[in-house]
Image 1: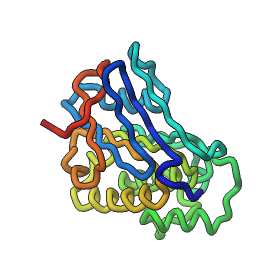
Image 2: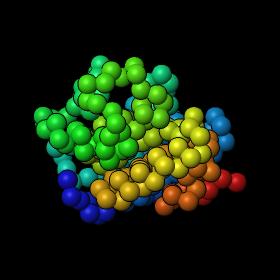
Image 3: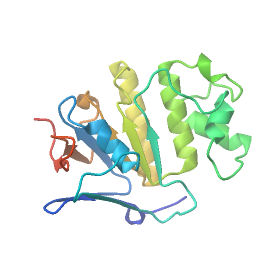
Image 4: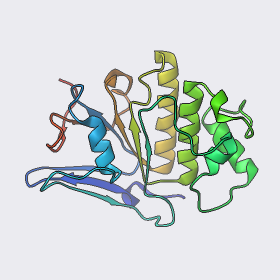
Length: 208
């Protein structure tokens, strides 16, 4: 879907502060280990309860597409299909043409991977790229990534980040990344939100 940056907005607020991201932005959640960065991703995905007096609101124009997709910090990955094709198609409300699946694989650096490849054959980098390809086909308004590059070497991490940058700017998708290795993302983030405590609203700001 072609959408403008004004078609999508993510707002977090309490009685004193408001954080807002627009379409095409990349938000870096940073903070000490154990501060609650992953928990805040789960809250944005409506998988965990909010603290009292804190609200999260996502507005988006395309009601036919899933609002949110999340990549969990988990390895080995838990797949929903048996093959690359099944994983790409899972949860879609339409039957994409094989050429569209091939384009998604090519976009995310997986042109050498056949759609019939069994998922257990993929390495960690390929698994990450496949998850991103599946998300891009679903066309969500908000993508949540939990520690996506922590296990990658710097070269691979930067290549993935560049591809995420291109995609979120082309599609005006909001991407929120929580990570401990924040240095990977410091030049890519349009905003940094610092998590200081699990039940306190994040505040604008980068690593201390």
